[in-house]
Image (cartoon, rainbow, N blue to C red; front, side, top):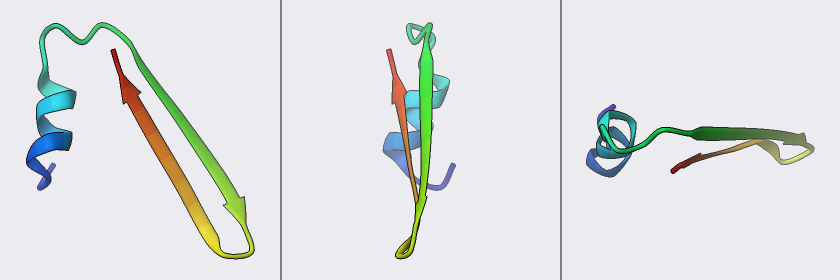
Length: 36
């Protein structure tokens, strides 16, 4: 929540959907979120 852009997406009252993905590999953990 310290990222202004991320916080704005989470708290956006017009966002009605959220998707998330996580991928693990030898380099680490990678994650993504999409708000619509």
